[in-house]
Image 1 (cartoon, rainbow, N blue to C red):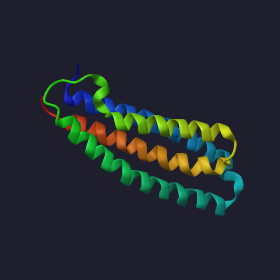
Image 2: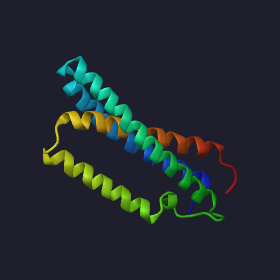
Image 3: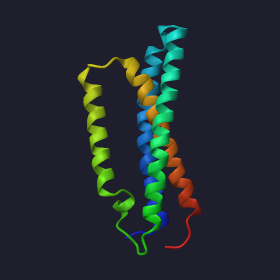
Length: 140
């Protein structure tokens, strides 16, 4: 059983680890396709920024929701309670979809270059936001 501060820390580390891993895949794909000319590189950067903005907005709401839920716990909780059931299902779905798409060969490397870079960066920022909230947490 762990306190609220530890739950926020676990959430931060999990989100950051996922983000860094996805960002690594995206950057690797970007480096593989970057030789396609300045226009293609600019398009990749613009698309990655758009994906980042969309997911950052969504993840900001999730960080706020999970922080409020975790702070609402009045007693220590099992370490896995940094997510609720719905979030575990969403995470499993997203991981399965991502792995399936990557291994299907149906999408070009360019897609993973911009999509995974933007998504990975947004997940990483969400993880850092959880860690910042962890450092500010007091009590329980």
